[in-house]
Length: 347
Ligand SMILES: O=C(O)[C@H](O)COP(=O)(O)O
Image 1 (tube, rainbow, N blue to C red):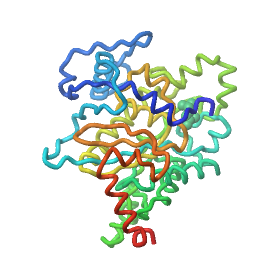
Image 2 (cartoon, protein in one colour; image 1 turned 135 degrees about the vertical axis):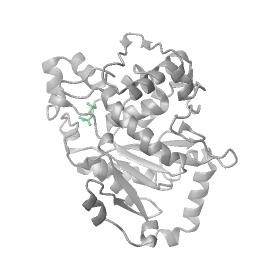
Image 3 (spheres, rainbow, N blue to C red; image 1 turned 180 degrees about the vertical axis):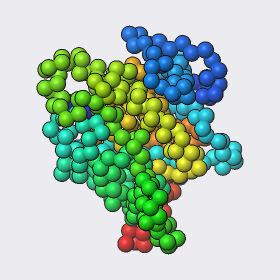
Image 4 (cartoon, rainbow, N blue to C red; image 1 turned 120 degrees about the vertical axis):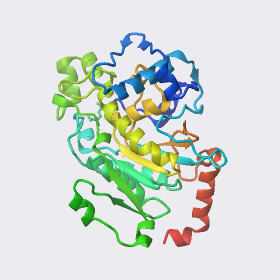
C-alpha cells in the first residue's frame, strides 16, 4: 500500500515519547491544556468521560514535556497494581498488524468488513511468526475479524514452544461450555486466543468497499487523507481514530494491561488503526504525531512491560537477533531454555 512504511520507519516515528514521570492519577489532577499547533482537540465530542480524561491526559503530558529517546520508560497506567519491589514482574508485549488481506490487495477501504488474507498475507504472517518464535507468548488477543485471527494462528504455528493456540468462544454460554478442555495437561500445552471486537479495525463507514485511489480522485487527496489519518475527523458515518481509540485503548487498559502486570506475555493481532491507537497510548504520541504513524502488514513490534512501564524494542528482524535478547535477561533465559529443550518441546 502506498502508505505502508517499514518497521525501521515506525521505530523512528515512535521516538516522540514523553519523559513525564507523572502517574495518570497525578496528571488527571492537573488542569488540562490540550492544544497542538493546527490540531485542536475537542475531547467532549465522543469520548466517555473516563476515556476523555485519559486521552486529554496523554495530550497534556505529551505537549508539556520534551521528546526523549526511544527507550525511555513511560509512566504506569492507573489500572496497574504495583508488584512487590523485590521481584518486579516483566512481560513481553507483541503487537502485530494482520498480513495483507484480499481488500488490501485491491486497495479497498475495509474497516469492519471481514475479509481473509491473501497468499502474500499468509506468508507475511508465517514470516512474522518466525521473527517472534523465541519470544514467550502466554495469551493472545485478536480482533473478531478473520484476517487478524488467521495472522495470529499462522504466526503461532512457527513458535518454537509448539503450544497450540485455541480460540476461546465467549459469544454465548453454550459456546463457552461446548468448547471446554478437560485436561489440565492439555491446557498447559495450549495458548488461549481471546477475540475482542474492541480490537477491530476502525469502522470506515460509507467508505467501506470503495477503492482508495478512486475515492481520492472523487473527493480530493486532502479530504481522503484527513479521513484516513486525522485523529478526530471521522469518515462519513464511520469512526475517527479518536473513536476507535475509545474502545480499543479501553479494552487494552481493562483486559490486557492487568495480564502484563501479572507477568503474562501477550501477543495482540489486530489492525492498522486499532493498533495505531494503542501505540499512541503506549508511546504517548500526540494527536499530531499519530498522523504520521503507519504500520506495515505482518510486521511484529515488541514492547517490554516492567514496573508498570512500557519500553519499545522495535521489530525483531529474526528469531536469533541479539538485540532483542540483550535488553532483558528473562527473554534471553527463555530462549536458552528453548535451545536446551528443543528436542523435547519442538517434537
Ligand atoms: O480498513 C482498511 O482499509 C485498512 O485496513 C486500513 O486502512 P487505512 O490505511 O486507510 O487506514
